[in-house]
Picture 1: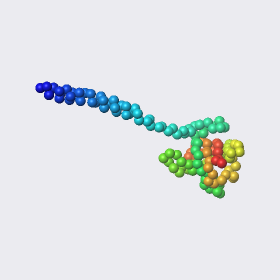
Picture 2: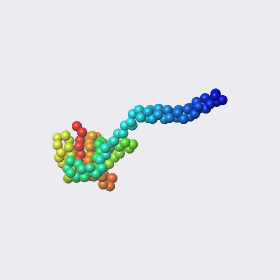
Picture 3: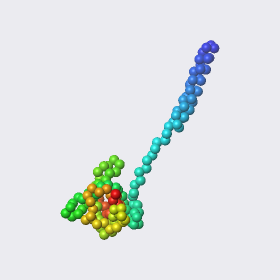
Picture 4: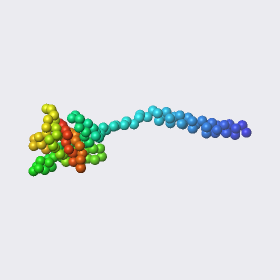
Length: 137
Protein backbone atom coordinates (compact mmCIF):
# COMPACT_ATOMS: atom_id res chain seq x y z
CA UNK A 1 0.00 0.00 0.00
CA UNK A 2 2.77 2.37 0.86
CA UNK A 3 4.44 1.67 -2.51
CA UNK A 4 1.31 2.49 -4.48
CA UNK A 5 0.82 5.66 -2.40
CA UNK A 6 4.37 6.78 -3.23
CA UNK A 7 3.91 5.90 -6.90
CA UNK A 8 0.64 7.84 -7.02
CA UNK A 9 2.29 10.82 -5.33
CA UNK A 10 5.19 10.75 -7.81
CA UNK A 11 2.76 10.49 -10.70
CA UNK A 12 0.69 13.37 -9.33
CA UNK A 13 3.80 15.55 -8.93
CA UNK A 14 4.93 14.60 -12.41
CA UNK A 15 1.54 15.41 -13.96
CA UNK A 16 1.00 18.70 -12.10
CA UNK A 17 4.49 20.17 -11.65
CA UNK A 18 6.35 19.21 -14.84
CA UNK A 19 3.98 21.09 -17.21
CA UNK A 20 4.51 24.29 -15.20
CA UNK A 21 8.26 23.83 -15.35
CA UNK A 22 8.07 23.23 -19.11
CA UNK A 23 5.83 26.30 -19.54
CA UNK A 24 8.33 28.44 -17.63
CA UNK A 25 11.25 27.11 -19.70
CA UNK A 26 9.44 27.71 -23.01
CA UNK A 27 8.44 31.25 -21.92
CA UNK A 28 12.06 32.06 -21.06
CA UNK A 29 13.24 30.62 -24.38
CA UNK A 30 10.58 32.59 -26.25
CA UNK A 31 11.52 35.82 -24.49
CA UNK A 32 15.23 35.28 -25.13
CA UNK A 33 14.79 35.11 -28.91
CA UNK A 34 15.81 38.26 -30.75
CA UNK A 35 12.94 40.29 -32.09
CA UNK A 36 12.33 40.05 -35.81
CA UNK A 37 13.80 43.08 -37.52
CA UNK A 38 11.22 45.01 -39.48
CA UNK A 39 12.53 47.02 -42.39
CA UNK A 40 10.32 49.86 -43.51
CA UNK A 41 10.79 50.88 -47.10
CA UNK A 42 9.70 54.47 -47.56
CA UNK A 43 7.38 55.10 -50.44
CA UNK A 44 6.43 58.42 -51.81
CA UNK A 45 2.73 58.78 -52.41
CA UNK A 46 1.45 62.23 -53.18
CA UNK A 47 4.55 63.80 -51.66
CA UNK A 48 5.40 67.45 -52.04
CA UNK A 49 8.60 68.03 -53.99
CA UNK A 50 11.19 70.83 -53.71
CA UNK A 51 9.03 73.19 -55.73
CA UNK A 52 5.96 72.64 -53.56
CA UNK A 53 4.12 70.68 -56.26
CA UNK A 54 2.38 67.44 -55.39
CA UNK A 55 3.95 64.35 -56.96
CA UNK A 56 2.60 60.81 -57.14
CA UNK A 57 5.64 59.18 -58.77
CA UNK A 58 9.08 59.09 -57.20
CA UNK A 59 11.49 56.49 -58.56
CA UNK A 60 15.18 56.07 -59.31
CA UNK A 61 16.22 54.22 -62.44
CA UNK A 62 17.83 54.46 -65.85
CA UNK A 63 16.85 57.05 -68.45
CA UNK A 64 16.04 55.49 -71.84
CA UNK A 65 15.39 57.20 -75.14
CA UNK A 66 12.44 55.27 -76.53
CA UNK A 67 12.13 57.15 -79.82
CA UNK A 68 14.93 59.27 -81.31
CA UNK A 69 12.71 60.79 -83.99
CA UNK A 70 10.23 62.38 -81.58
CA UNK A 71 12.68 62.63 -78.65
CA UNK A 72 10.55 60.45 -76.33
CA UNK A 73 12.09 59.29 -73.05
CA UNK A 74 11.19 56.75 -70.39
CA UNK A 75 12.55 55.48 -67.08
CA UNK A 76 13.41 51.85 -66.40
CA UNK A 77 13.24 51.08 -62.67
CA UNK A 78 12.58 48.31 -60.15
CA UNK A 79 10.41 47.86 -57.09
CA UNK A 80 10.57 44.91 -54.65
CA UNK A 81 9.08 41.91 -56.43
CA UNK A 82 8.67 43.75 -59.74
CA UNK A 83 11.89 44.19 -61.73
CA UNK A 84 12.19 46.05 -65.04
CA UNK A 85 9.25 48.44 -64.85
CA UNK A 86 9.05 51.18 -67.47
CA UNK A 87 7.14 54.46 -67.57
CA UNK A 88 7.09 56.99 -70.38
CA UNK A 89 8.18 60.47 -69.32
CA UNK A 90 6.53 63.71 -70.37
CA UNK A 91 8.76 66.78 -70.14
CA UNK A 92 7.09 70.19 -70.41
CA UNK A 93 8.02 73.81 -69.80
CA UNK A 94 7.57 73.36 -66.03
CA UNK A 95 9.83 70.28 -65.82
CA UNK A 96 13.06 70.94 -63.90
CA UNK A 97 16.38 69.08 -64.14
CA UNK A 98 19.26 68.88 -61.66
CA UNK A 99 22.53 67.61 -63.10
CA UNK A 100 24.49 68.51 -59.96
CA UNK A 101 25.06 72.15 -60.83
CA UNK A 102 21.66 73.36 -59.64
CA UNK A 103 18.05 73.05 -60.66
CA UNK A 104 17.04 74.53 -63.99
CA UNK A 105 14.76 73.94 -66.96
CA UNK A 106 15.10 70.55 -68.65
CA UNK A 107 16.67 70.61 -72.07
CA UNK A 108 15.37 67.33 -73.47
CA UNK A 109 17.78 67.49 -76.41
CA UNK A 110 20.74 67.33 -73.98
CA UNK A 111 19.61 64.20 -72.09
CA UNK A 112 21.84 61.13 -72.36
CA UNK A 113 20.57 57.61 -72.87
CA UNK A 114 21.47 55.23 -70.01
CA UNK A 115 21.95 57.92 -67.37
CA UNK A 116 21.00 57.14 -63.77
CA UNK A 117 18.14 59.44 -62.74
CA UNK A 118 15.61 60.04 -59.96
CA UNK A 119 12.27 61.15 -61.35
CA UNK A 120 9.64 62.99 -59.35
CA UNK A 121 6.39 63.62 -61.14
CA UNK A 122 2.70 63.10 -61.49
CA UNK A 123 1.44 59.78 -62.80
CA UNK A 124 -1.32 60.30 -65.36
CA UNK A 125 -2.61 57.66 -67.74
CA UNK A 126 0.39 55.38 -67.25
CA UNK A 127 2.83 58.19 -68.09
CA UNK A 128 4.78 60.47 -65.77
CA UNK A 129 4.58 64.23 -66.11
CA UNK A 130 8.10 65.15 -64.92
CA UNK A 131 8.31 67.75 -62.16
CA UNK A 132 11.98 67.17 -61.26
CA UNK A 133 14.67 64.93 -62.73
CA UNK A 134 17.84 64.54 -60.61
CA UNK A 135 20.78 63.00 -62.44
CA UNK A 136 23.45 61.00 -60.59
CA UNK A 137 27.02 62.20 -60.83
